[in-house]
Image (cartoon, rainbow, N blue to C red):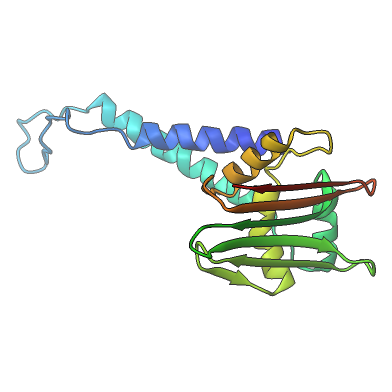
Length: 189
């Protein structure tokens, strides 16, 4: 599922770059044949290609929206968490200017799933479990973390997925995997 999502995301980006090409070489002047029937209209093949690319990008965007998983309730959150490599996740990144990025998804002992987003960098603060879970899931679903990974590989992947800067003061992350094992990483600069 992660590879399929990555493939579709890559396809969309490529389509958008193609669709948003530079039109500076298009020297055709629009002509209305109804005004002058003696004028032949010329169809610019670049315009036809761009229209086809725009339609393909729109179709891909609609498919991505259809594939986007959103939890409607606690049961949905549990099912979606089962698709991940881990059952709990807690990430805290502190920066020089006392800004903090703190996100977590916790699987409580009573079975409830709690989630929270406190992103001072981007001004996002979500305390509602369902809303925070739906905000975080597209990010955590991209993670490919296992308990044997190198510390720096885990840090780099998290910084990349959450679009965070590498000039942090302190970086802490904890994962609890489905088998109960944990991965804890702490790094200070």
